[in-house]
Length: 76
Image 1 (cartoon, helix red, strand yellow):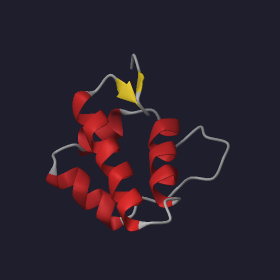
Image 2 (tube, helix red, strand yellow):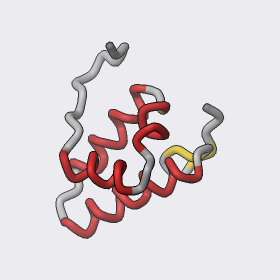
Image 3 (cartoon, helix red, strand yellow):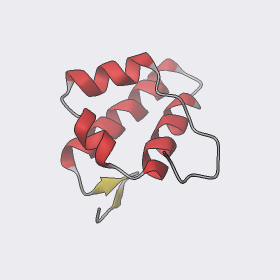
């Protein structure tokens, strides 16, 4: 159950796979719903494959480092 009032972005298989391969699914699931939704929408809106990969890499890096969200300090 989510408390978001906007549309939820679906989790694509490639992102699910990347999270699993890096062992970051628990870190992803621990984030607030708005962050998970923002990450998925941000990645999905990329027009070029290299931009999509860059955004995915940023998300994975931020999850691994924890206290970062969209290049900002986040105190979760």
